[in-house]
Image 1 (cartoon, rainbow, N blue to C red):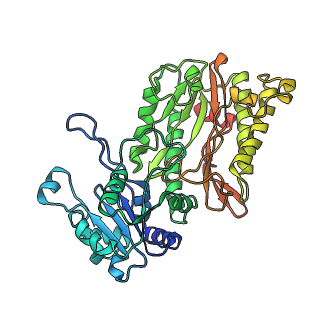
Image 2 (cartoon, one colour):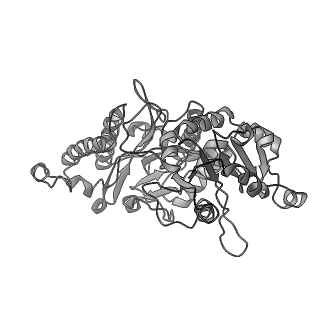
Image 3 (cartoon, rainbow, N blue to C red):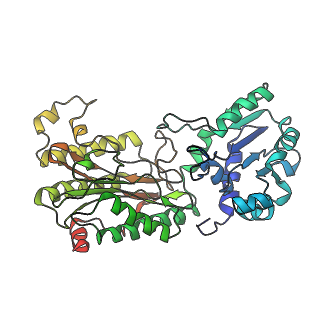
Length: 430
């Protein structure tokens, strides 16, 4: 892997934190992601199942973790299955984890690590002591159409082989655990953010009229790869002019014009953890008066929203309050009428015409990380803060986004060192 070794105590502790959440006589089975095909014999780059990574640190295909904290035999309380390598695999695909290396990565003793082809034999010795089996599914609230995952296939297989066991949902437990970042996780997120900082400073010296959005993307990737990142945490949005009013614009194929503002929604990945940053900068290095007014309005909303991210607050209430702040700014910009806002339908607020998405989401191993919006905000949670104003008739879209860690005494802006103020952006571009 490109990233530096991670202290395996993170994964040991994550498994120990999961165990008390299980019912008595319970097993957990978590599978690696598939290697996804493209066409013919092509494949996509492998990306590990984040729950498996969270519990093991293993970043390799064909891996399976089985936990059974109450098994009478201690050697069956944590069991890892790995793909057995060979000289042929070594020649064609490269090195795979040995059992000794897997012990160093996971903290699971070698005597409890087996090859994947031994799964049925070992699992059969374990499963009949269990009553409840926790299996994994993608239960993210924004999950869309999916291919059938290895986890989903295993659910079907398990039901056929062991129809009288009781299946339980692992996802809610993982959402609960992963929402609070452990001390060892925060430096990994911060490294992704620091790489993003380096990238953005590079772009400020590169952007000018006439460059193409994809050329900016190339500069971005150069800096990411140079700093041990696998690449972008998500498909980058590099949207100049009117493109910035398309929330998920990813073509990155237009030429940047003098006088336009370009919206950059780009963050680095590091060790499977993610940064999520958005900046909006003038292509020619100088905001017009109108562009600056809209920019500063978004920045004020961002700063007020950031202050609202503190322990005890609730997601929906937070977003309602941010909406009120945005209403005031849009009235100030002449985009909304104060009287019409006073008489609006509260279920269809007028500000949604210019700010139609949420302000914050969980951040971590997933960019839109798992968590429960009905759970009060707690220390250790990491959120984005990303208000925006999109004025299609003016071909102007401005969004600003930082990543914030909630603490006992308030919060910490993990992106505080990344240029944000309009004057700072202009100074660095000129």
